[in-house]
Image (cartoon, rainbow, N blue to C red; front, side):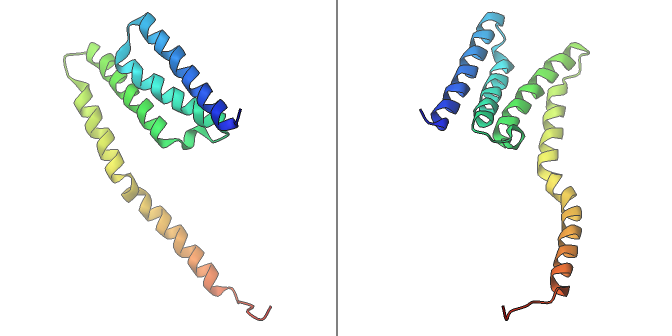
Length: 124
């Protein structure tokens, strides 16, 4: 059995156990998002990858948490928090690169300057 097959087995095993928990608790929505995301993280972890670098899995888990938080916050008052949380999450995804571009351009320009000032030895 290859390591890829084994990692797929681990992912499916986690998924089936999570699905059983959803049946027992009757918490399919948003629980299914969390189960799918955790199974994806288990698969990537079994492949030896950093689980935090698995962006699709983190997005699925984040969606599940977002809907869970909406349910909890709706219990706290009559205001519907879910649309506000979705708008904030979408705005963050749209503008996070713009906020980080100022930092990355400064570091890349200093790197470019240091490379220009280094003498090249083309004769070796």
